[in-house]
Structures are given as structure tokens and as C-alpha cells.
Length: 243
Image 1: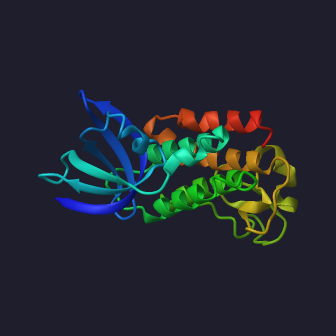
Image 2: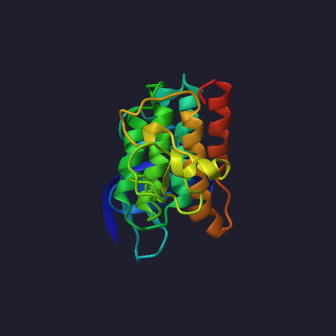
Image 3: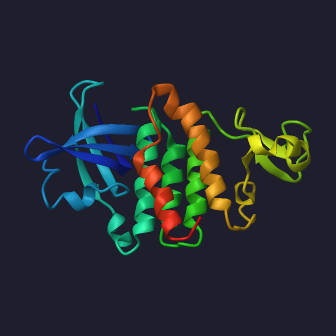
């Protein structure tokens, strides 16, 4: 079994004296683990950071076996963000969420392109936290748990949608949701339209929204919590005054 594909590194851990087991999110093969010979070396470590873009060449004797891969780095990777610890926290959180949420060896090109879009804007501090929220929403969509924000679940109205039902993931209008406002999740305008704009609290509301459904539909069914890197991201954003 052999393939070659564009990929992002999601995680890497030492294996043996010189090797590493690397989790990759590939463009067409999905999430794959592979043994990378020499992955523990100083030369390779910069290319095995979460979010690094690589060309992966994978080979295994039989399907289902842990195969071996050679990785060719593409671009600067996470090193371009070393002066921005908050953006690095965003990259680490995205990689950890994708690694924990996506099933192994199942194609999810939408998740790959969502991560690609997020990484492309991490240097723009004014917008990437909102794009991160959209990344998580896109991941839910790709896994079959997409939010329905098109119309009010109660009345069918398409205007003034400001809540989401925590049970169904469907939007709720201000009027229909008023009696239950304390039980509903807040829906930030930027999740309805790219021109929705950002106000104070919108990113936090967006993270609360996607985090709730990632826990409910993706992580809790497998008795897993949200990845610690995702929790640390919220801490870093709070410390930076960007929530």
C-alpha cells in the first residue's frame, strides 16, 4: 500500500531511540499515523510541530498496518508564528481538536481545507479567532453534526437569529427564544455571515457554541474531554484581552 499526499502534522511523539510516530491530516486520505525514521533528530523536529505543512509519502506492506512515511517540509510552518504565542496556541488547539475528532483513515477533505484556511490567516490577529470558530463549525459539519443556522427552529423566521438550541444545534430567533434565553446558546453574527462583523464577546460566544457541540456529539460519546490545548487557547485569548 502506497500513497503520496499533501498533509499537515497534527502531533508527533518519540518512538524508539531515533524515530517518531506522527499523526497527519492529509488532503485525500484523512487522518493517518505513520512511523517517521529519524523523527527524533534535531533536523526533523522543526518539521514535526503541530500545523507544519508537508508532502507525505506513505508505504505499508498490508492495509491496516502502521506504515512508514517520509515527510518533505513545505513553507515556513509554525516557525513563522514564534513571535505570536496566542496564534501558536490557536494552531495547537486546531491540530489537537482535529486529531481527537477525526476518525483514522477516513477521507475528510473538508477538514483539511478548513485547517488550511485557518492557518492562512493566523498572522492576522484581528480575524483569526473568528476563523478558528468557523474551523470548528466546519469540522462538525464534515463529521455530520453541522449546525442549522438557516432559520428559526420554532417559527421558521430567517431574521434576528441570535440563539442556538443546545439540544438540536438549530438557530432560534430573538422573539422565540426570549422566554428561554438563559437555556440557549448565543449565536454571534459572524457565524451567519462573513460580513457580520465582530463585537466584544462574539468570539467567546462562538467558542462556547462549537465547544458545546464538539463535547456533546464528538468527544463525550467516546468518553473523551475536549483536548487540553483547546482549553489553553481560551486562557491565552482571555489573557490577551481578545474574548
